[in-house]
Length: 251
Image 1 (spheres, rainbow, N blue to C red):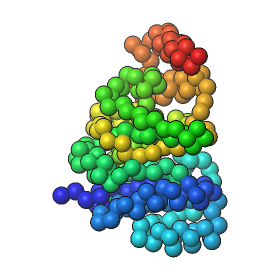
Image 2: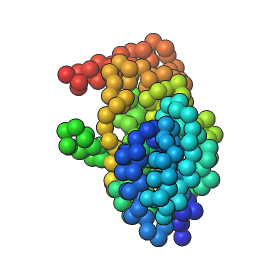
Image 3: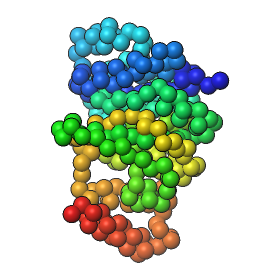
Image 4: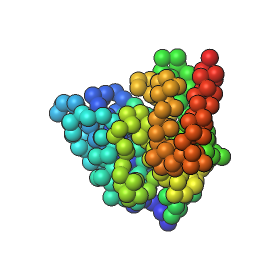
């Protein structure tokens, strides 16, 4: 029987946000009998705050690393290279797991495959609203075009394969997680389940212009798959259409 403790590591990266980090860790306390491995990668925390984390969440027994602040994906790469279990989930500070049952269900469904994901609840703290996002009928084409995406707090991946891909590409400041998911998709289709795995708190750098999003997905697409129909001209037209669709939907 698969156990979370032997199969899964949860990597949590956080920069100078003790309340958000504690919200994440409190969501892990529900894992009573089968606790995943937990790695915390922290930047700009005081020793007093670290001591507070160790004291309040002693039962979680996290491995804590303090590193210089150099961006979220750099921190996630650091955590990725510390993972010793087969599977990994990135749950950054401020986000939270919904239930142990949903996570266990996803692990069991993945089995020996490379990756999978469930639904994700996007929470807007300013508006006090939330919306569940599901992309259960996965389409690599729509993902490649940036018209659908994979919600990273609800994704479990094979850690060794993620390292083989080179980790998170630091030149993509916002979309490095989507590049990694497309690298996985280029190798195998994901397992998907309808269960909501995680809550993701909106805000910050995740809100961008349509042109920036399309530019990232275009560059990622070209790196992984090449031009559409092996034609630079066709590729240019495809991405012009995608940008037009995004801009019309944003109006």
